[in-house]
Image (cartoon, rainbow, N blue to C red):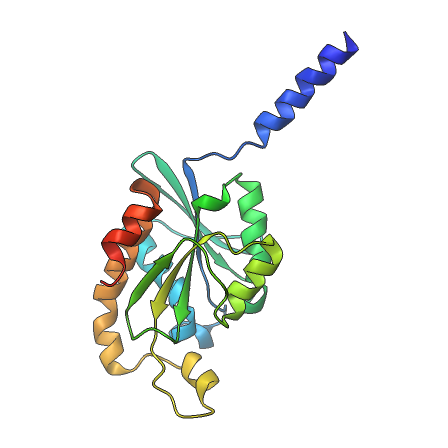
Length: 208
């Protein structure tokens, strides 16, 4: 009898920890604070803000960030903007991944990329941090590089020694004009990731 009860509770525990494959965690990387709102480094936040506004959903302040819940085609997307600052992004990702029981293959991290021309899109199933401190911390905390990332190109049009100023600087007028169309595509990528899958999303959107 005792053994049967132990097995029952053991089975229940396993069931409770099973990831919900209809849940997705979409992480936009950025820094909190008014001074960072329109900077190139905050494109992750900007993409999520664009989608939230488009779909008339709002963010709530939660543990380790701001979170919005978006329903699409039977899937639930948790849009997360960590408030830990870029260098500690992994803490927020791990917490919400575990709290909502989201599988690592259902995580998409949106980040800026200096190695891509402005507005270019590169979606990958895994990879190194590429020198990005946000990805570096996520890799460290999750102890893996095997999660999808959506890199948004911000180009490298800066003078020698001015990389930090450029990354933390505002978009120029030409970029501001082009951003809405790029953000529209970015919002479609998020929906495609959950509804069509990573492989189809990469095939359709990479290079657009």
